[in-house]
Every structure is written in structure tokens, then in C-alpha cells.
Length: 188
Ligand SMILES: [Zn+2]
Ligand SMILES: [Zn+2]
Image (cartoon, rainbow, N blue to C red; front, top):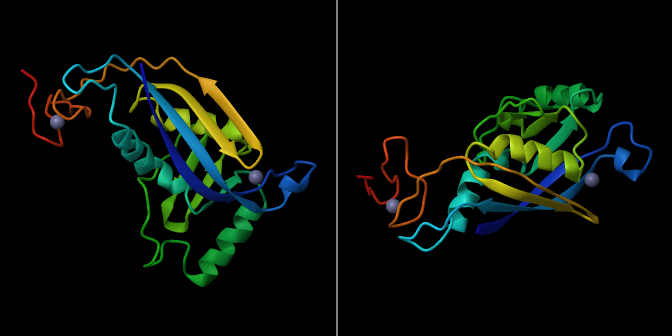
């Protein structure tokens, strides 16, 4: 069965080299739906608590929120970093606190200090699904990702078969010692 959760991500981007309005810098509220598939944990009668899926995903994905997402070859990238540098906000600012854990995959690198994600490919809805899967595939058993941004939407199904032991008392993933980080339950 599947547990399904949704997150909003607000971001700015553009499609560099694209012949259309999207070649200009603009922003969206994207809606990301994650479907996590597993057996039902009988103790709690659920696949996974949806707020825990959100927490796991958001720890990484908040780097996309209120961020600028640019392709690595976009000439706006050095131009913007130059402005941030001159303004003294390139390496962080006291009011930039909603930072996720920095990440780097084949497809994207996050720079949380200046709220920037640099991507290998254009960040279309399809591109976002590929990036999100790369970032979360080892943390969650993702069966499907749907991403909607304005009139654009895409979805993709995946086969992720991580063996994630869950707490029979609160449903969240046990750590590598078989202990629930939330309630302290220990697997016998
Ligand atoms: Zn757009
Ligand atoms: Zn627990």
C-alpha cells in the first residue's frame, strides 16, 4: 500500500536557451507529491506516517524553497553570484536560516548559504522529478513522484525497495541500531 504526502516549494528559475517566455527569470509555487510504498507496519496499521515523509523530504528539499534554481551553464549564475558577493550575502546572511543539509548529486548541487541550486539539466517539472528521486531514493521507498508547477505537471513511477524497519509503536524508521529515534522502542 502507499502513504502519500504533498509539499509546496516556492522557487525562481528559467529555461536557459529555451524559445519561449520561460527563458526569462520567473517564479512558481511547485507542488510535489511523494508516494511511499511498503507493507503495512501492523503495530501502527500504516505504511509510514505522512508527517515523517514530509520531515525527511523537507530536510533536503527546503534548499529548493525560496531559492534560485539555475542550470550550470547559465550566464546568469556568475552574474548573480557577483551581486551576492558585492552585497555580502553570498556566504550567508543572519536572516537566511531555513537552510537544509547541503547536497550534491549527479544532477544538482545546493548552496544553502545563498539559497541557490545549480542543476545539470533545465529544471522543468520532469527535471525536478529526476532530482528529487536522486536525493530521496535511499531514504524513502518512493513509488511515485508527481510535480506540478503552474500549468505544467509530470509524474513518474519508481521501484525503490529499501528494507526500512519501522517502529511498531509510532511507525517511523528505526535507526541502524534498531532503535526508534522518536519513542525509544528497541527491536528485539
Ligand atoms: Zn517556470
Ligand atoms: Zn517509535
